[in-house]
Image 1: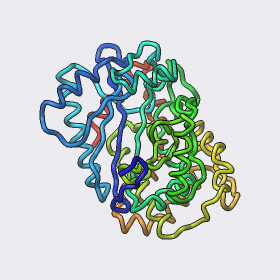
Image 2 (image 1 turned 90 degrees about the vertical axis):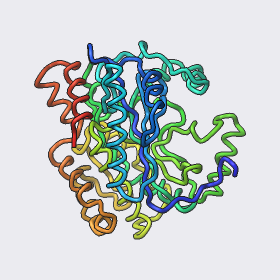
Image 3 (image 1 turned 60 degrees about the vertical axis):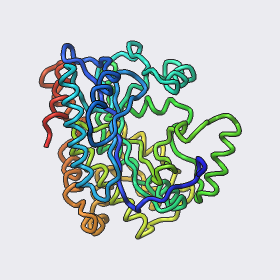
Length: 372
């Protein structure tokens, strides 16, 4: 099997990756701890997978493949239990959130693997600035052509995922005025943003081989697109989300992805062409800057309105598909977030109460530990 053969996966199956913050109990700052955490976790059987990320202050957890969001959420709870048991033994805290509120990138240490050192050499200070934290959602596809259809179809709903997951209003010790400041760090990389408009897997394979021939990429990992195919898993991967503050929000986001994908595959609501991307950058910025109070232009109808209104209208269209998948409860929790406040709003409210960013981080860690 070559690198660009697309593995078959059960349609609409789910998997999740979460990048999490390793935090000092003493001052709430990020702290080195990934090597020790991974070594401790590896000593005993556990569910899920635990991996290093770019710096020693990050750890990535991932689930196995599930057919429904309930089972996915159950595994994420077990993964959380394993991670918290290890972090408690090492006197560390674990937190969600898309960016640490006050850490300084220059103090980070690159995790000791050849790939991470190579990226550090290539990207300079951007590598350490990449100490930001995202949720990646994998949705299973039967073949590469369907993956490319979903990749481009999902672009229409990308602002929803940004606003729903936004959890990085503070960065380098200041309120950025963004709901998701993390996306600005991602956007600095040359292979970030949107994927090219190729509709068939054979065309994507040609594109990939040409980019590899130019020496621009060595593997699919070198594409930092908002949404990308993952051929070895047989999935389309949504990479735009901040890591939420709770397991429950992470599970609900996966449920939303699964439901949108079912809607796209069954109803085929619009034509996949370049017009879908005409307002992509505008919508992306509005969602990151203003969250659900931002504007959104529907690239199909050309209607301009509030992102919140578009999301609520989409939930109504998705209702039959949510009922079939059993995701209605998860989607209702997201509706409440759109109406009553996301993680970013909670963070600002919490900070306003204490006027202390370390206190905010400690309370974020409590959110991750105790949320049900």
